[in-house]
Length: 399
Image (cartoon, rainbow, N blue to C red; front, side, top):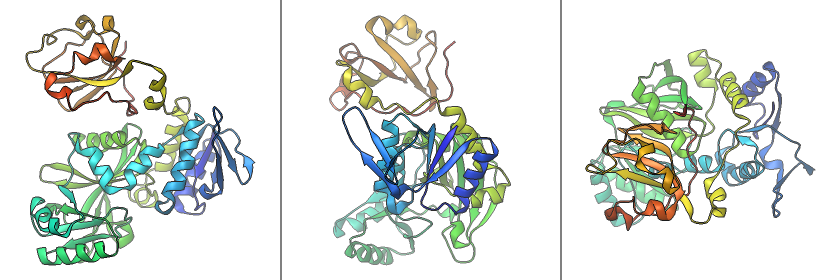
C-alpha cells in the first residue's frame, strides 16, 4: 500500500508514529504538507499538484488537518475523494466535527446522548437560554476551540451573562451548555477505528481545573467501556462521516453524553496510557479498506432520474407487520432495503426474509413514485427524499 499522510507537522508524535507503523508493516508512506498542494478543477479530470508536480498515485490518504487550516485542508481532502482515493476521514466528516454546533445538530436527530445545548446571538435570548439548559452553573464554549481553549465554566447566571457579552463583543460565537455536575473534571476519550472502539481512557482534571484535557495537566487512566458507551462512540463517528476519531464523552447519570468528536485525535496520550499500538491499528484498518473508496450518493444519484433514498416507517397497525421484507412486495416495486433501524439498533443490508415489526424504519433506495405511497401522510409534508452519504457499515446480513 502507498499511503499519504496529510500533515504540516511531520515531527509531531502522532505523525511519526503513523509513519513508523506503516513502514514496519511494509507499506510505502510519505508525509505530505497539506499547504503545498494545488487543486486543479477540470471537467471529468480532477487533479492535484504537490510542490508544482502532479501528485503520484496513492492507495490511501490519512488526513491530519489542523484546525487553523480546515478550509484548505478539507478542499485538498475532497479532491482526493473525487480522484477515488480512499480517505480515512471524509472532508464532510472533518468539517462536521470541527464546528461544535454543527456536530451536535447532526447528532441531535439520533438517539445519542448529548448535553443540553443552546446557541444565541441576541442579548435578550441569553437568560432564557440559560434557564432552558437548567440554569447556572453552565459551560460556555467557543464554536471552534481546541484542547480546552475557549471552554469556560460560569458558576452564576450573572457571570455567564458577562462572559457571553464579552465574547460576543469580540465577534465570537458561543454555545451555552448544561453543566453535567456528576462528571465535573473528568471525561472519557474513546478511540474509534472503523466500527469498533480500540481503546479508551478516562481523563481526570487536577486541582481546581474543571477541564479534563491532557494538555492542561489532566491525569489519564485506562477504562474498559461497556457496550452502551462503545456503541454510542461508534455510531456518532459514523453519523458524522468519520472512520478514525477520538470521541469525548461525559459519564452522565443517564449514560454517555457526547461532548465532541475529534477527526485528528492525538496518539501520544492514549498510547502512553494504554500501552497499545493505536497507530498500528489505524494502518491495519486502512490497508484492509483501500479497495473501497468513499461513494457519495448525492453525486451518484443525480444521474438516476426518478430514483432516490428515503426512510420508510412501519407504524403500529401497518399491513406490513409480520411480513418478511421479501413478502412486502418492495422488490416488485423497484425498492431495495439498505438498512433496518430497530430499537436503537442498526441492521445493515437486512435479510430479505427478516420479519417486519412495529416502529421499524427502513432506509430504502428505489423509485421515488413507488416509495411515496409508503411514506405516512402526516410526515409527507415535512420530508424530502434523502440523497446522502451512508455511514460505513462493516456487517451485513446478506447470505
